[in-house]
Length: 392
Image (cartoon, rainbow, N blue to C red; front, top):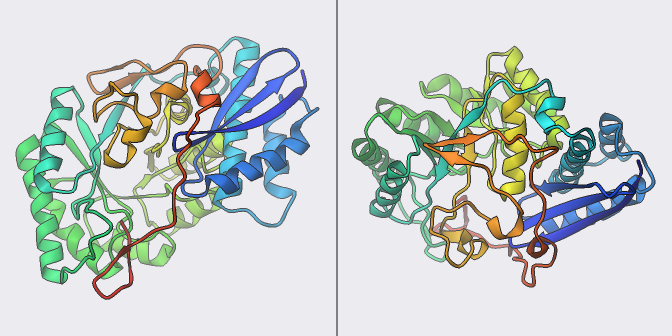
């Protein structure tokens, strides 16, 4: 078998790749280079010059070549490698007539617990959406930003006491409204300084969040380790890590309790299983990061099926900023990007069934290959009242 073509496709807010072979088998993957999909697309096109004419079978070898042929990497390049890697695993599974997880050692579970997304500009809207998801059967809800997802055109102007007190009240009210039956996955989006993160983490500990994600920008291992050491709730980070070595450094520093592995960024399934094994050796659970389309979700489910240390799977329901990726009849809590693919996982009572179709289990629809209006993410910021940048 030989690779005959490698084609990137932009659809909605997503970047896909199809790897075609001379046998007619086509593999599908997705890049998670959030905000830099144009650059990641260019990297896919560059890697195509190496891949065309090659046997798609030696996946680890191709993975090493793409990572090591040059001296520079980063999110755009690693997103491209991830998309191609997932597509190569898809080809191998289809060729052998088995799901990808069968090639990774076989399934250790038949279904995986999900947490759905809520994004809201007010406490009332957040609680209403969470209650709706609870009624749908979800037992965990994430993307919960206690500092709220306010309009970026409005400058932020709260002082320390009001900032902390208002956000603590959001977590308190969520717990009171949802009860102990629903786990809260708190997402800070890198909003705080280490000092603020320690104060806030200790304030919300009585409401038992499942985890406390990215309380600060995850650049400093030492600072994240300080937060983890000074708070009693588990810290989750890693969604922006593109390499195994970034996870290794944070694990060695005891800077995380949950590894947020981005399958579409960290090197695809080849990279993700390396990170999962590293985490397992340190008794750390994996929470696969998935803000993308069903292609990414299927890749995550293949990983979830084959590793013993997955805790829960992120399930990206449509939010305020993603309504343009939903079908016209979709509700706010529908999976994103459904019109770009040929299949969806079965979801019931807050769990997704592990797919058993050969390969990845999903392919691009015609719309996924020919979306007339892909969404470009513009460079913008929310300003503090003093004019500097607020992470949101």
